[in-house]
Length: 499
Ligand code: NAP
Image (cartoon, rainbow, N blue to C red):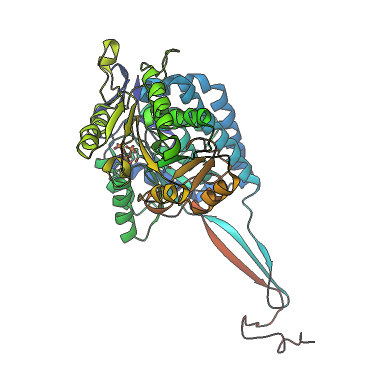
């Protein structure tokens, strides 16, 4: 299989003629070659998107929404096929890959409805015979830059709201997941998207990224990925006063109080810490346990972690798939000696898994670290692998202090049966997403998604909030008095309206 760029409605190779490989991280099998783009390909994609913007913005929004409804139907029809390809391309187990595609379907349907909403405000004007209202105006050409961990869902979070609001898009997916990016573009092409409205550029972010971000034809950069790349993009774009929306890393925590249903809490921790091999931005890489239940919690968590079965994500027997790449495996594993050096104890896992067929892939044992203090690197830095650190706290206040002690602020949860504690936690947690008696993952598309502090730059994906990223507000005043009326100056007395 060979994967190409999609520019101005045509599938084309890069002008460089070079390619890169798309491989299965569970066994190293090659799935496809992908065209490796250079700056000239970015230029073509941006030019096509700029030209298409002139007509796409004038297509009635309900018609734009209808194309998205059709895309949702095609995604639903192809769900199983896409999920299987996703498992092979980036490793997550099949049930989770199906969930990723389903999230893309949910987002597509949800946003399609915005074709008939996109509500603005109509408000009273302060002067007689005057009308005041606000409407949304598209940003223009959007660069959508996405990571590999949700290779279908995250692109839909960006592309669907951008399109329904009348923007055109240049899509630069992660180099580990070009196949799913091609599939999403195929779906929108089949749904009837006009040429040039969505353009796909495959290739290395470190080589192409600066050119795309600083391109004068790009109006908005919507980025999801690491904090390092997000900061770099923001710096470049900031100098040019471009709009930038960043969704970045996390160091999410599950707090378990001494009155919690411990069985329920352990289920939530295992799912949130080890699902997708810990490669979710919302993964629970910290567990903050009340001291009163910590020993019991650790025993049970260690028992469960040791029972998880590693393997290819397409096999029914597999609980945990591989990490996405060799470099990601090395990065995750490098935290084990860091943890030990700082005084943490490895209570489960801690090794690269190399038994039998696992030797061909990038597998890491599910790992539980204990004796962890809040200021240790493993308690502060995003590890992005199947590693969770248990930190003990004496009471709710201390647990919240530990929770809020990192620079990140994406997701958190509390397990408790005490409603007062739950509400204090909801109020004081400095994260964009908070759960009660559930793990840290599982966001739904109809609410905003994103984080506080260094997890982002104040924007949100999904929900109604997504519309604010991909549109500008335009305030409109219509004076039908037939005379000069001056706001703030012509007061009620002067206009003859005083009682
Ligand atoms: P990454 O290395 O920052 O890459 C993300 C995207 O940026 C990729 O498409 C990458 O291309 C591209 N890129 C790299 N350098 C660039 C540059 N100079 N200019 C423009 N684009 C550039 O992140 P990742 O490893 O793929 O993803 C993992 C990170 O994403 C984690 O930190 C995770 O927490 C975060 N994440 C956050 C959320 C959220 O909503 N908060 C959701 C999911 C993931 P290449 O692939 O070609 O390098």
